[in-house]
Amino acid sequence: MTGSSAARRSTGTHAPSTVLFVCTANISRSPYAERRARQVLPPDAGAGITFASAGTPGYPGRGMDPAMAELLVARGGDASGHVSRAVDEEILRRVDLVVVFEFAHHMRLLDSFPRHRHVILGLQQAARAVRALGASRAEDAAASDAFDRVERLVSVAGQNSMSYDVEDPYGRGARAAQACADEIDQLLDVVLPFLAGREVPRLAAPPLAVPTEGTRALRPAWRLGRSAPRRALP
Image 1 (cartoon, one colour):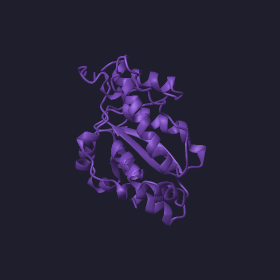
Image 2 (cartoon, rainbow, N blue to C red; image 1 turned 30 degrees about the vertical axis):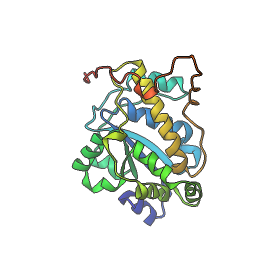
Image 3 (tube, one colour; image 1 turned 135 degrees about the horizontal axis):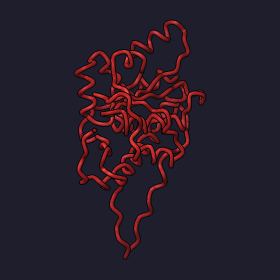
Image 4 (cartoon, rainbow, N blue to C red; image 1 turned 120 degrees about the vertical axis):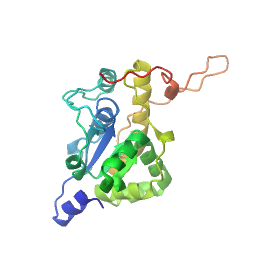
């Protein structure tokens, strides 16, 4: 159990469990994931869980990246009011699970905040942990509270690696942004029901139909825009 979880339980406080999404600058991937998660699990949903985001190293005071904000709004989310911030000890003391998008984020947090190492997972790593629980996950989730579900997820997660990275779409065009948003939606569709302990509305669009003979094969969405050059943050 994390320090924040233990303190709240020992006092009998029914504060929600908090999941913190962390990317590089807190302007693209992490705010998109935070706002999408809030769409299906708003604070008043009764799931006992809330969502936040931050960056490492972070570029405080910025709004959301326009490309990802446009996709968020088009998918029913709200991009207004986001202000980027950097991860610090005070933020980490108030959260129960830290979800990162790259192995580099994971390692940076481990170096800077080693006492929180037990609550840091990659998004892909977390999704794989839920899948690893198999058929028992629904029963386990339904029979526990949000704090228990977070601890269960962390306890079964394997090792993170660079192969699980959700690539940064910043400055790489609309296709890269869409591919990133699609991947995040698909992974959240795996993780959020477990964290909530129940079924939740799906975020990802239905998969594309398999091309029939004589039609041009479609490139997988995750390949779109991958070769585009990255642009440094201004």
